Image (cartoon, rainbow, N blue to C red; front, side, top):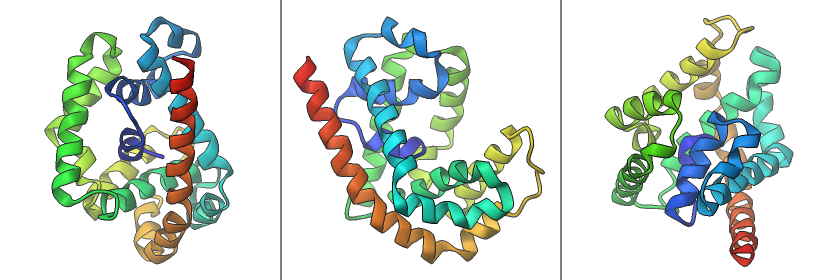
Length: 197
């Protein structure tokens, strides 16, 4: 899952921070944060583990695997944010706008915990409202281009965005089969985390 899905699958402000920090910190550093942020890191990991093992995600990876092989999961993650952002059964358009603003506010209120490389990204994320704008094809294209640019062993002209467009119906079905399961899993993990507190 990508940024929007991770931010949506949270239950406290601290978990929002932890969900975003997970990809930017070393494993040993996670215990240096307040418990609520640690819970977000734990939740992020549980979401990633569940996602990687779900049959619908294995199907979705088949769309990108012929082009990018082991990087297929990264492009599936970006694709899933498109379907989350367009899922009006989860949130209204206004609800998604409000969610995005809340996430930026919470992250800025916890600026002291953010590593420098994440602070830089947050500025760009907020300026262009990435979270809300994942609903648009062009923003998915931009995100996929970022993945290609960061990948050391991939040609920068691989037509991954075209594969996304050509297989939208397949990916939509994978999302439909997957996300309700992930939502229930995240709720279960959160219940266990609250019992620990």
